[in-house]
Length: 338
Image 1: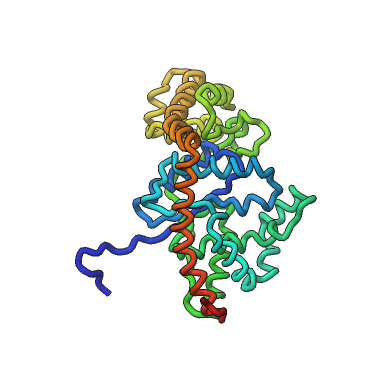
Image 2: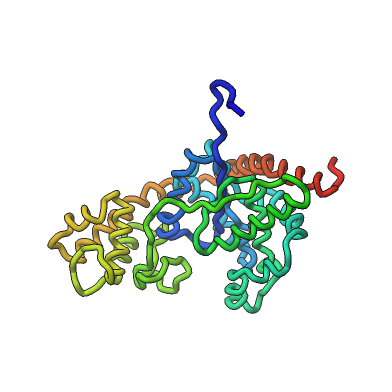
């Protein structure tokens, strides 16, 4: 069917969520969040602070409240635009928990028991193996299916959840008719594979006990430079990308992402110069890249009224979209709608 004259074709839809459990790292930013901003123009996006998922592990209320505000502020600060995309806090949209129950009755116990993250978290939090920890993949499926996205960006640790979401959507569609778009996993474009500064064969993680191993998006300039100065390298003292040079390879990827330079350009720039010069340059480049984000973050966090107004508007828009999906499914399942 042809589009009417002057009517642009509908953009494909995409959804991504992030938990408010600590400040994202440089790895989170370069590996995912920066791409979210770029995807806004290509896709009809929905982005959420997934605070309901955070409480599968017991949280201190005041700290959680602050972290929700900080994460929402950071998403705004990195460049997500409420005029282009849905941007909201999950718990402020009641449709998420309503659809979760409807989908829970269409999710098999065996499917949830095979989730590797449930097994991992059960071992880490053996004193609090709660129903939410077991069933949260169904909430994740609700998060996704509410907004009928065509694509969901996934990393290696989320592929299993994406497949479960597809299975649930297909099952519901088979029983009740066409309710959900069955989303496809979206592999994001190549980006820096940011590793730990102290163990460069491992992923950079904010949960690492060694704070020198990661860069937080809110680290100040002096802290960033100091952490890079302490980064693990090797004894060769040659800035070149090669097998077995995990520490230098990691720093070159980070420097390239921060400056736009290729590996060849970086090698020429630091030909004959030592690792000390290179580490300092990487630290300063990263600090320069994060400075505008930090300035915007301070502005948003300094105006709570504006921040809450943006949350309210985002929640209202998200609830409008999500309610259509919930009402459609409830009608097909046989509920009496008022």
